[in-house]
Image (tube, rainbow, N blue to C red; front, side, top):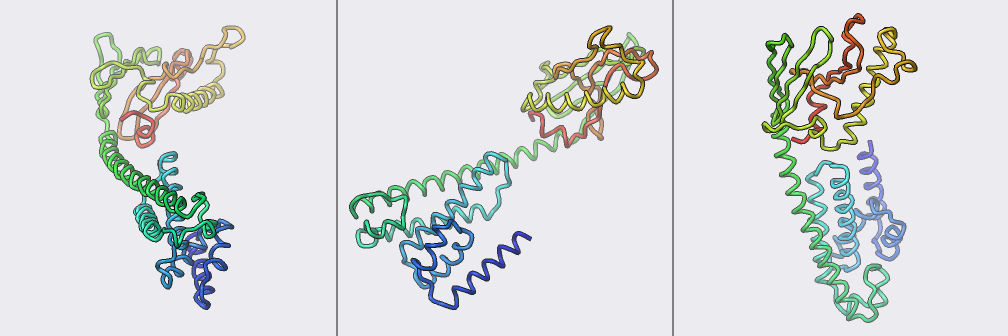
Length: 313
């Protein structure tokens, strides 16, 4: 809908200006002053068809495309936004018009009187304006080249990361029983492996270990951002704990008499099991299994696709 609206506005704008001779000072610059860059871009392109060597039009079209590039660069860096092919067109277009501007900038075309159209060029004499303009254009072009290289590197990184993630879409787990009668689960998942020992009588996981490339680590070490992971798991486990308590409050110790029997800490979370449906995470909530159900630990299943963005691959 937004694209259709933009195209409609563009066609209307071009229709209006195609019926008369476009004048930069009268028709274009007011749009620039009001920062109506979406409207002015097609008008500038139309103007340049008949005035290819107009310094002001080349400069502003180069600047507007530069602004498009910077906007998307910020979005890519801050929000991990998609890098679209048209963003590369913004870079190439900006460079094209800025290079043309640089070739046109001389004492005759860029003087203190006309410099009001170029707010970034604040020289005193015509000579200083020309030097200042060409220096700044060179700097902008260098920044555009750097941005393009950064996007190429980022695209490569994302492509490699996508391939790496595929290895985490599957998990291999085996169940067994040790000599003490505990149910043992061992799983391999990407560069991680983990094992858990379940006590069926007390209904909670006696021990759980996790390894990264055969080196034992803490559960919270697998996450990219521990604070975000902690917030997520805390909310999830407290929700489950409260649901269990509502289901049979008699199973849970009186908090006033015994104090808080359950508390959350990310380091207390462990992985119980895993399969094609996801990973089952657990935390001991201190309630005995003899109470009538599997209340010894709170647990929940999380799909592998949802876990992958949180962990260090």
